[in-house]
Image (cartoon, rainbow, N blue to C red; front, side, top):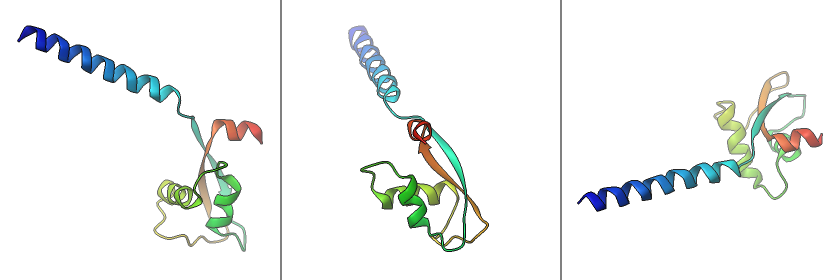
Length: 92
């Protein structure tokens, strides 16, 4: 019984450490403020800021979630937050 407990602790430790290592490989994110201009659409803004190869629909979902938007309708003068990777910000 004691061996089983020790083995369980070891397995749990490996699992927790493994998650920590995986977390180190994820990109850090920042938020960019964008003021909506006349004629802007969420699709066009997302297209401008999304990562290469990223699904634009998923990115729009993230933007909506970050800004508590119920729909894709945005208005001129509105400020929205766009999640971008730190690497992307450094490129611009």
